[in-house]
Image 1: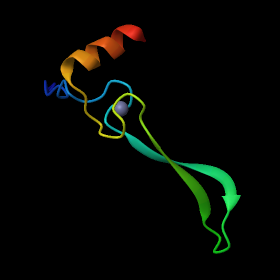
Image 2 (image 1 turned 180 degrees about the vertical axis):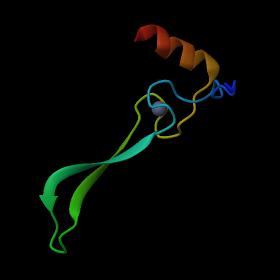
Image 3 (image 1 turned 135 degrees about the vertical axis):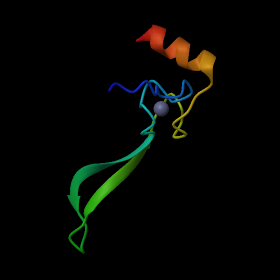
Image 4 (image 1 turned 90 degrees about the vertical axis):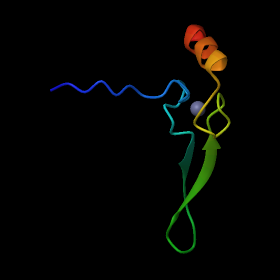
Length: 62
Ligand SMILES: [Zn+2]
């Protein structure tokens, strides 16, 4: 049976709520772990949610 639970309208349309990520640089640290760079979504600035007018404006721009 299909479910009709749509995502809340406030979730950022640019990142779908995954607002912060760590990108591997390709460099290994001394302990063997990968050096990463934290990056936030430019639309919601790492919050994952936006106000409704901003979400509509971004969707039209894309
Ligand atoms: Zn975002």
